[in-house]
Image: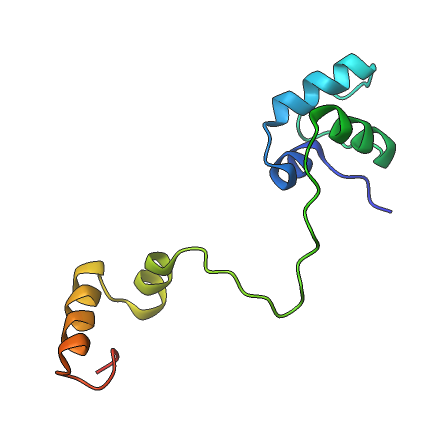
Length: 100
């Protein structure tokens, strides 16, 4: 199994990598930077010390909206002001769909 990097664990757990490094120092680990890898056993110990809640595994096919505005600006090439105008027109019934 692949040994996780400290910064990856910090990102997954939602904690600062410095907090993980501090706990590793208390355990006597040789890790000095967030780019170091640690064993699965060390990761489990640190997770228990930081009391990181376990999250359920994501379901395949489940979608999550990260940023509607970012998708609009990048994918459609529409400014946020232009999108608001089109949405208002759609609400009034001036056009049948947003893309027109």
